[in-house]
Picture 1: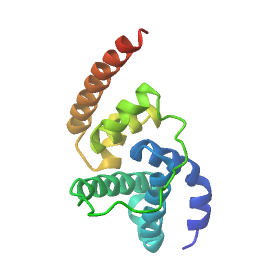
Picture 2 (picture 1 turned 180 degrees about the vertical axis):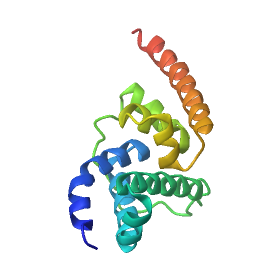
Picture 3 (picture 1 turned 60 degrees about the horizontal axis):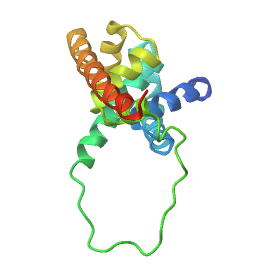
Picture 4 (picture 1 turned 135 degrees about the vertical axis):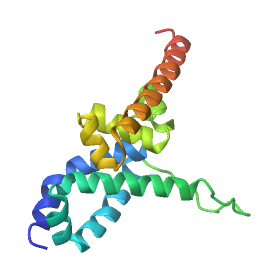
Length: 162
């Protein structure tokens, strides 16, 4: 565990931002980061020895975990009764931002590629390494995501009169 605490202190703000962009909200981001850091911490010496870049390893683990969680949640089961207690979540300050809304609708892998490329400013090769995919897949996912963003944002801008 040598160095894990320091790693968390230094990397946590960036990992939370990355998680927020992946999941679409700060609460799920915090859950994602915590889950992944628990796994990384349990294997810390191996992660440092084998990966050489614990931040990249952690980002990849976050993207993979988020995609897996998304796949599982697509099959949610409806409940028979509505709960009696009403839950009021904190308002997301980006809720009504057109770019944020469209980004939230992208499939997880496309969103991860866009976030890593344009938010984290990683190269295609670095994104491929972080996500464990080929450079060609990075390019195709980025292309599809950008086409979707342009199309949906163009419609939103025309609707708003901008």
